[in-house]
Length: 330
Ligand code: PMV
Image (cartoon, rainbow, N blue to C red; front, side):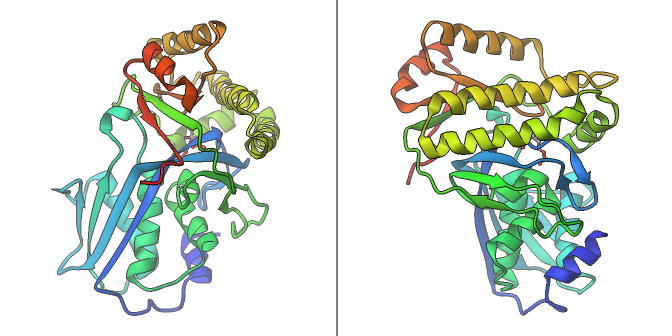
């Protein structure tokens, strides 16, 4: 199914009238069991489910208003519409406008510190989807908005909620069941830390990386079942607030994903020397009794999982860490 057909079955035939302003916030998220591989590239349908934790106040705020011509401001700076980022944003907006003349100004502000080395596409597309829904008064259910955000960036499907979020892969060819949903848990002592290694844009984006891995890695065949099994274990650990199982499984899942990539031909390696050094440090800290675990996405940066009681010790081992309380209320 093509994207145009996908949007036609979700949206009303013509857009309702726009409000003066549409506005929304969406948090960034980090997968504890990872999404890697697409069963449908056009609709961003994954080969396996995934489960994430949202990063509270680290995310994207997006505001849409009518304008004389399409305009995009990122963190206060007006972007050339020919930049890849602007093209992606307006291609997405066009799925809704479908040729209708309705120029807009989009203001997007990322609160994710550039130094944190975190992709902002998940929170970016989630906030854009929510702001569009608000601006054009679409009032779509959140599950539908998740299935829409997914088209912008797979992991954006999970950024519509705070806390733990599960994205089920779904089975339907039209992708209507490939949606995320929140897991009801407030694990208040859980903490995330971001360790910056390199914040330069990655050379191979996640889409190209997934395709190359699926096409050439002899280990890829075993990945979807492993990822689904890890997802179930992590979900159970969340219900039981079993930090050891959560940490062990999250770290193992991330390393298994990177092992599948490393086995691709040629190898796909997102790690840098410092990534390995940081992993060794995590393992050393654990050997010395500190309950801290690592997870790594499609880039060199390392994220830590630990519990509030260990924050001072984690900060001592990793002085550069940016600490996040995912369930903070302010
Ligand atoms: O949403 P994308 O296309 O940027 O892919 C995200 C891939 C990982 O970050 C590696 C894993 C995940 O589930 O977020």
